[in-house]
Picture 1 (cartoon, rainbow, N blue to C red):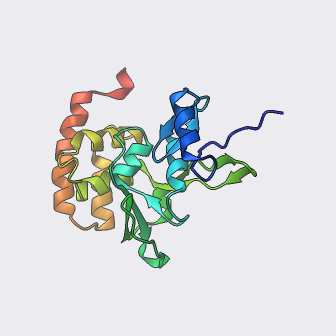
Picture 2: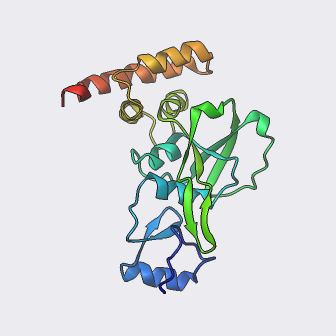
Length: 204
């Protein structure tokens, strides 16, 4: 009987040399810091599963990392995670990711890649990711150095969330009394222009 490989492989599953060889032979492809069999799609579930191997379960992927998981941005050089202030979680320092404490209700997150095949069976898990609307707001409030003018990305996230314009994001800024609201509104003005340039998605 053929043994099914795990959905995401690490050097804990196979030696690094063998993983690299299988990648060169076209049997595996890189996804983040890990590898996946080529018969699996490189989709948001696979990207989330690869990140779930890096961080504890309480971590929430945010900003550019969330946008990468959604397939809207390149993989950032250093992944961005957050935890609720009330979590009191400890994360050892890592060059691959940073973690910050924020005010974030779990209703602003979704679990992606919730079922994964490992050698000992199909396990629940996955990774918490900020929803597209929250991701757009976070990028508007804290434009990343890698993308200081993220209006096109914010527009794409809002479209992914099903919003035809920035009005929902503006309401969230007003209701939640988020920090850096003025900065966010400036970015949302630019995102509004980008969304208008994209046209009405319902007419395509």
